Length: 156
Length: 156
DNA sequence: CGTAACCTTTACGAGAACGTGAAGGTTTGC
DNA sequence: GCAAACCTTCACGTTCTCGTAAAGGTTACG
Image 1: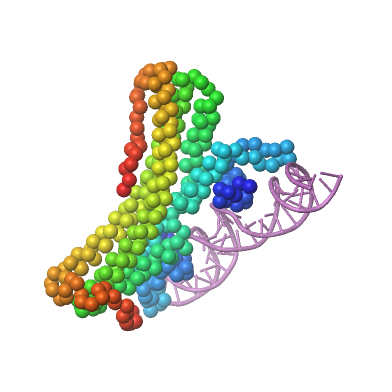
Image 2: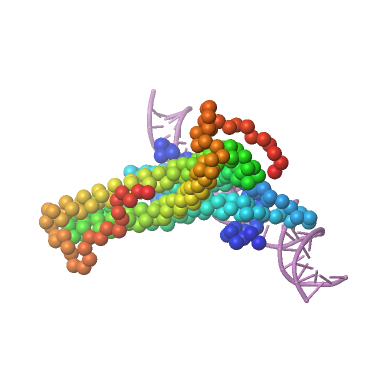
C-alpha cells in the first residue's frame, strides 16, 4: 500500500502513535486512508530520518512547520480573497525558511567537521612538503610511484 | 575524568564494549588510562554522534579510517626513514580524504533537502508575484515588506 | 594507616523505534 | 456470496544506547 514510500506499515502507524501523522480519513471499516499530503509528509519524514539522521523527536519539531504548511496550503485553496492568499503565502514562505534554517545548522556542524579534517590534512601536507624540501628523497620516487604495501607489524 | 570531552563514563565504556575504542593502557589496579589519541578519538566519536547524527554502527565504519590514522601517526613518530615517512603521510592524507568524502555525502543529502524546500519556496514566491501582478492588492501592505531570510545557492 | 573518592565488573532497567504474531473485521474479485 | 487478501487493534519481543545501582578493589591525601 503506502510502502511505496519506502516505509513499513508498522513504522507509519508508529509515527501516527508518536503524533507525527494524522491519517486524513478512515473508511467505513476504519481503514486508514491517506491523501497526497500525507504521502508527501511521509516522504519528508523518511528523508529526515534516513538522509539527515534526525531522531523522531527532532522530526516532530520540524514537522510543526510542515503541519502549518499543509494547513496553510489547504486554507489557500479554500479562499480566493487576495489579501488572505497573500498573507498565507508569506506565512508559508516563513515556515519553509525555518525548515531550511534547521537543516543549515546541521550542515554547518558537518562542515566544521570537514574543516577540522581538512586542517589535519593540510598539516600532513605541510610535513610532506617539508620532507620533500629537506631533500631526503625526490618528490617523485623512482619506479611505480607511491606503491608501498610493506607494513611491518611492529610492536604497539 | 574524561568527561571533559562531554561524554559520561558509561558511554565511553559502552563504546569500548562496541569496539570503538581501546583504552591505550591499564594501571596496576586495572584502571583505564587514556592518552591524547584516545581523547581525540572520543571527540571524533562525539562529533559524529551529536553533530552528524550517525549511529554507532556507522561510526564504527568511519573509525576504521581514524584507527588507521592513529596507527599511521604512531608509526610516523617511530621512524625517521624519509621514504617511509613520506609513504605514511600519503596514506594518512588518503584516510582523511575518505572521511571527508563520507561527510560530504551526508551534506549533499541535506543539501538536496534544502533545495527541495527552496523549490517550494520559489513556487510560493511565484504565486505571490502573480498575486501582486494581477493587482488585487498593493505589493506593500502596511508594515514590513517582503523579507528574504534564506539565500538561494549558498552552497558550501 | 585510614578513609574519601575514585575506579572495576556485573547486571538489571529504560526509552526509542520498530518487528512480529494473534485474533478478528473489511474489501475485492470472480 | 465467499475466499483471498487486505486491514484493525492489542500486545509482547528486540536492538540500540546508554542510566543506575550493587558489591567490591584502588589511589590520593593527610
